[in-house]
Image (cartoon, rainbow, N blue to C red):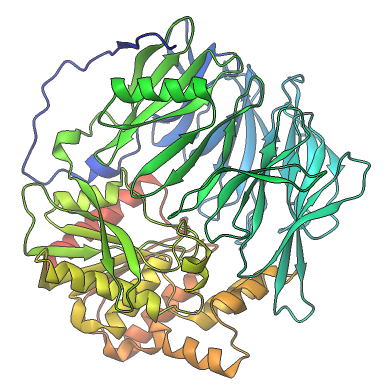
Amino acid sequence: MIQKLSLALLLLGFALIASAEPLPVEYFFKNYEFSQVSLSPDGKHLAAIAPVGKSRNLVVIDRTTMKPLAVTSLTKRDVSSYQWASNSRLLFYVEEDGNESLALNAVNIDGSKPRVLTKASRGIQLIPRYTRMVDRLKEDDRHVLVASNERKAQFPDLYRMDIYNGRKKRLTSNPGNITAWGMDWDHKVRVATRQIVAKDKSDATAELLYRETEDAPWKVLARSKLGEEGTGYAGFTPDNQSLYIVSAMGRDRLATYLLNPATGKKELLFGHDEVDVGGPSFSPRDHRALAIGYVTDKPQIHYLDKKFGEIQKALDQALPDTVNRITSLTDDEKTAVVIATSDKTPGTYYLLETEPKLKLTYLAQVAERIKPEQMADMKPISYKARDGLLIHGYLTLPKDRNKNLPLIVHPHGGPYGPRDNWGWNPEVQFLANRGYAVLQMNFRGSGGYGNKFQVGAWKQWGLQMQDDISDAVKWAIKEGIADPGRVCIYGASYGGYATMAGLTMTPELYKCGIDYVGVVDLDMLEEWDTRHDREGGITAWFHRAIGNPDDPADAERMKKTSPVNLLARLEDPLFIIHGRRDPRVEIKQAEELMNKLDDLGKPYIKLIKKKEGHGFRREENKLELYRMMDEFLKKNL
């Protein structure tokens, strides 16, 4: 049994005073002090991303002295993420001004021997070029295995890379239809996902492939067409004989199974009746499966391993007001990094020692300036759409107020796959701090609720998906939460589309709107996506999920549900935000919108940044955006 948890916290020595006054924009949107804290494989060092000057850089902390050392010195770009390549060397990724292509770099833990291993692409591409580590190779401190799509955008090859000079040796060449590779614990490529597209690009099939050895022929373990329940690879058992898979075959929601590929026998390990579940996490020591994550109203975890299940219970007893997760674990399992988060805090990092007894020590707050008692509660809600479908979401109310409030309706992006979750959201807390209620909804098409919930929303842009959002507004009004005369809609990407659809299709519901990197023209989106698709898979999916302009019925529907064609109905104040290097929703969408608004003589305000993409990342640009949003909402709500 686990011994009693010893909690050693370095407490801050000042009083925390809640304020009724609006907090500065910087409070919510300045770069965090620490993020992505992790341990080296041997546990002797910690690494994190932290602001150094005006950029986010990579910092290494020697655990014997706990003194931080900035090992990168970027001034105009940020380190977006990093990985431990060995105990003494780190790989880190730097984005090229918004286009989502990442340069792969390496540096030693003392800042020596920095090297650009692969450069970022300069152009704007729907599928950016990448090279990323997929296997650390514990037994080799000079090389890692990487996946790279430098030859074919959608179909990566596997390479052995020298982490000091960037030289690569191709291990597995992609025949032209493999979208992902899977390796066993001996670094042998034995699993692959294959895409087969119909000649007329009307459909596509995904196949999960397996082979007993790297010299053996591939065999198909599972097959699914567009819109059908699929199967994905999640890892090997420690003996490399069986597979963990995540599948919805024979059921609507993804569950985790253990599959014997020799016999085809499949054993259910964990599933949930209401939501999809993910694949397992694994021990770095002996590769046993540890836990499976999933999200209901809040994040949940199901433990397969008794030891770590008991550790989780002890963590939750010591930190009862937060969601507590192990995010980094040493190779010997003796030390871990834990982050404790909630809807009111971006989190606190702790160091967890698991032997000889559990000991939890405070490391750092993600953002020391953010005081949970000044933040608002995010509460799970649900309501019935007009056709009776149950929709889940979240409602955040300003502190000490709950009736007849100005309301911000905040639909998420995607739309297929992503969903809104309970937890820290700086935008939501910023808006609540300004006195607005914030309503988020997982409209049909959102991820995590099963295949029918998602596929049932195909070709429903501006139709049932938009109805779900409108019904959320009506629910909030009926409940007395929202003042019907003070409702604004704000979203990014698909949420930007939903914003413009709401303002033009149901203008009576809204008093203003904020369109952030949003789609306004479905034909233009189709042209952008299919132009960058040489293999046909994106085209097949787009035509099935959103629409095919060559089909008369689809063409008419896409025209009627493209907000750019409905701007004569727009009467509300509008704020348009976009990055010129956006690789997903091209800047032409915003330009067409603004040109037509100009032709109609309809006013709007805008914020267009040259070196931003699908969402602003530079700190100064984010601060400018939210200051403008603050003033826009004050004026119009």
